[in-house]
Length: 246
Image 1 (cartoon, rainbow, N blue to C red):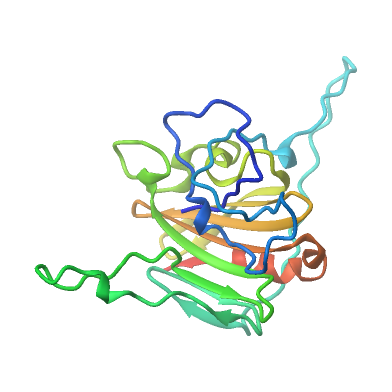
Image 2: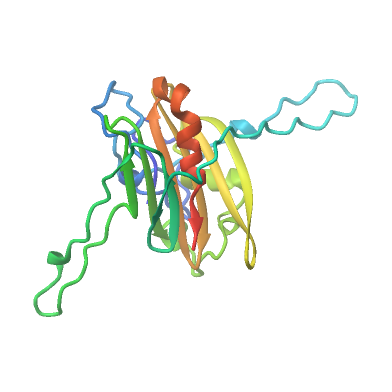
């Protein structure tokens, strides 16, 4: 499952212990590509190591004690309680007004007649688009051991490493990273940790919100052309962050 694109070339040799999300599953704009460097062009996989620019701070050259780094500014979001709430397989997410449900239906014709019908796995657990198809909100679910080779199933997103380390899985190499956050949300049994990344190339802009539950990675994403993100980014970011595990 993934969110990643051919525009982002590999910056370093691949890490044999890591896999990247299938690029076909990222939140993608549904409109035709507007340049050869279109951010959402599909690729087989992402093999990249990315430094999270949002977490880098310049080191003072003075011998005096360096001041603490500034705190990241709050992410701009809106209240989504009035939006339609979509319930999926183990999750729920809020859908922006006027967005259409384009989630593919279950394909029960894919099964063998000898062993009974079996549903064909869906690429997207949920998928919605704006009326003109230029903006999209998606949810993808993937076994964690398909994202990082390990004998154990991840039970928390921190099992992928720190926010910076997990970017190797979730963020395409070469992307400009505008924001990166670790977000903890209170649930009945404690706090659940999510990783949030916002990135783009100046043509396309994406927001990604990811967590892990019972060996599965749940990733919500929102995408739009950069020209539209300036107006709709708060709405799209809010949709991505509304992902909740049931």
